[in-house]
Amino acid sequence: MSTTEAAGVTDGRNHTPKATNAGASAPSNDHVRPLPHGSVTVDELTLAAELSGDTDAIASADVAEYALWLGDDALILSQQLGWWIARAPELEEDVALGNIALDLLGHARSLLRYAGTADGRTEDELAYFRDEPQFRSAWIVEQPNGDFAQTIARQLVTATYMFELYSALRHSDDPTLAAIAEKSLKEVDYHRDHAIQWTLRLAGGTDESRTRTIRAVDAVWPYVDELFHDEPLLDRLNGIAARPSALRDGFDAIVNEVFAEAELEIPKGFISSGGGRHGSHFSTLGFILAEMQVLARQHPGATW
Image (cartoon, rainbow, N blue to C red; front, top):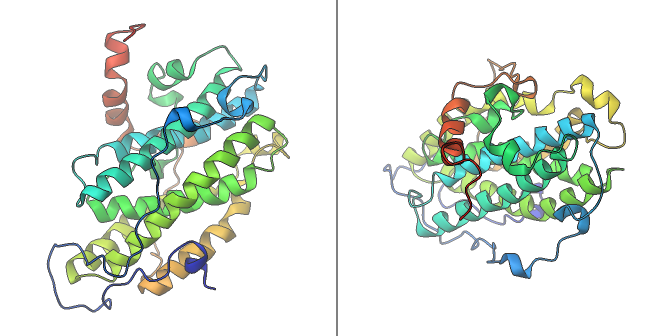
């Protein structure tokens, strides 16, 4: 079984990459398996105590900083994907991207809630009342949505990375992080599958969709390496955090197989140094935060 088959993709190609039916329309769905994301209400979920915050666990300063890394990645990516609601190329994609955004928001809430135990801040205070330099998100999640192909390229990177991350983190010695990772892994598995299917569809579709996919991959790839950089903080979290560099082989294995099937090449050239883990951000983050935080800041403490 190939890696893409193991990830839930059987045949995402609709045409050969050299298809001549140029145009902006999306490829046919004839050979693409329906996306499996179900509708799950909050009332149907039974959360572990560690996941819901119903424990007395208090994060250390280092663990809280690490939780902010992961929580901010999920929060900013969720905010970005929410933009696509009522703008996606298909109604099904409105639902799919909205569901992915909600999954990520749930991950962010759990992680920010845990991070806040270190100094008494709530998840809302961390989300809405920090300024840009206090955020710890990686530059890849701050990249513009661009067109649909660029959002999918960004999703392929982030979902594949998060799958490797949570696969490792569920074995953490920290029960709260392990519980969050266990639940999140089930959801990012779907996110990864969704991104792989769309990458294959777009790369193997029309001339237009393939051109846009190549351009999208070129646009997001300089920001991949930051995800796998080992910061000094990790040396103080042995057994608790997932070391980013250890996740790279699994990430590369999936991406290389997807790109081989899609007949895409890994871009070479400029690599961004990033800096998100230290509060240095891409130029878009200020605009993202302004939109996300405006209501809470205009009406602090309001209840609905």
